[in-house]
Length: 310
Image 1 (cartoon, rainbow, N blue to C red):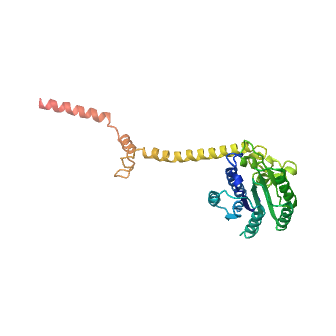
Image 2 (image 1 turned 90 degrees about the vertical axis):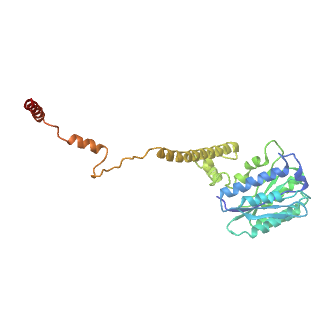
């Protein structure tokens, strides 16, 4: 599992108001940010994620590197849509935020969402890409919205100059019926870095399958069938919740059944120290029965008395 510090840069320019992505470009970004945070922290609990915007008057750091999902949500809700984007400046500020990370063993990564026109020229972008590569910072681009040839060409040139051992990716997502986050799961930005596969599934596949599902969760590659993986995960969580509910319902039932049993009013031992209940029956059995001869004698004695009185 990769230990990373990731800064997410969102595009909050006026172009993000467009509704060609469901439900809008800004809402689609917000949903994708939640997905990235969950994926990074689930892959490694020590990974941290930060958030910043690059629209308006200038880039703004909304949330520094954190593992608290609530801070990310608060940063998204505080963001206002306005102005135009400042791509190069936003990337530089994100690089500075990564430089001041507390855990220096974390790999540095920037994920940039861009849905508007890129004002920077190719020369400046190439220079910036080489500087980021020198600082061992990987940069992923999620291009959607304004996918003009000029924009995509600039992003492709930037991506070619920053590609290194850590891996930098470019995902171009055109409008469609699917959510932006659903399409993002199938891109190398999440699947190739061990986020969804967990445990180096990509290397296992290159070495000949890796065996046992290649290290993928549930033995299914999420990049090929994300809906199936989501359904399996939800089914497992529902089954776990059902079992916990059954266990809780059984505990009070056992207590009620014990309370319903009446207590014995008769003491276990009598005053002689003998077992009560069955002990009395045993004593009755041990008593000797009267002899028949004695009974006959008593009867005879009775007849004699009657004769004397007469």
